[in-house]
Amino acid sequence: MTRGWGHAIVAKMAGEVLLVDDALFEEHASTSNHPERPARLVAARAGVVRSGVTTRTLPPADAERAILERVHTASYLDKLEKLRGVRGMIDPDTYVAPRSVEAALRAAGGSAALGRALATRAATRGVALVRPPGHHAEPDRAMGFCLLNNAALAAEGAREGGAKKVAIVDIDVHHGNGTQAIYYSDPNTLYVSLHQWPFYPGTGAVDDRGEGEGLGTTVNVPLSQGADDDVYHEAMRRVVTPALAEFAADVVLVSGGFDAFERDPLASMHVTPNGFADMVSSIVGAAERTRSPVGLILEGGYDLEGLATCLEASARALVESREIKDEGRKLDPRHQAEIERAVLARSEPR
Image (cartoon, rainbow, N blue to C red):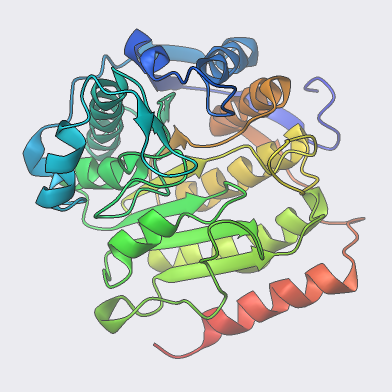
């Protein structure tokens, strides 16, 4: 039995986790008391170590321009290059330090390398401990602490490795507006997001389902504040895992934000480390049924001990066989209705 993780029953642990990390990620640092700080990376590393999983390092290299332009516009990348060596604010939330652009390029390259490794089956599980985070970065702008969209670059790396269909499950408490925008009309990329609503950045309505050939490959599960482990479990069971099963991706990626944690200072959800382990286990279970490798890319999470403990539980869940109990779970009518709306939206014709 794992430490303090409730009903999670460990059957076995097998395999290794490919780990992306680099000291350069610590150089993205504000001089103010900003929540997206290098101490987050220290906490994330501690979580992986405490998990006890066997890791193999994948040394990251900077992302090349060609793959960056499959995600971001050339004009935005040019603007970002001009911020090398600069310290300041891009918007009220998003800062740059003198080495932030270098760190972002290394994070993007490491994420792409992880996607490529998963697609070629050089590994079946991976974790990218990257900073700055990425899922708010849109094709043409930085936003919400994010400079380059790491999850999207992992998806493009997977395509370089031969994957045709890629699924991205975003468990960050904030909607990944950037990832949604990048793939909104793409039939070969499934984007699923569970997020607090209404909340920053204001996107991710349940009726946002994609457009054109991509209609139906965007799945949003907006949840009001106070959602706990049981609510997230039900959302995974009723919406997320059926979407993964139907899509049958070649590679499954997790935008691993841990700011739905019950004590996170930037949100109002009540998810515990056990709840995050359940979510990752559900995703892994769905991926195993389609023989898809799974990689987790670090996004948010601003309570340091919460980040460490949630990532510890999630890293173990990547490689463990676990029993997740459905019985005895209780949902309040408000959250139940929100999940029902997401189920109905996913059942709409394409």
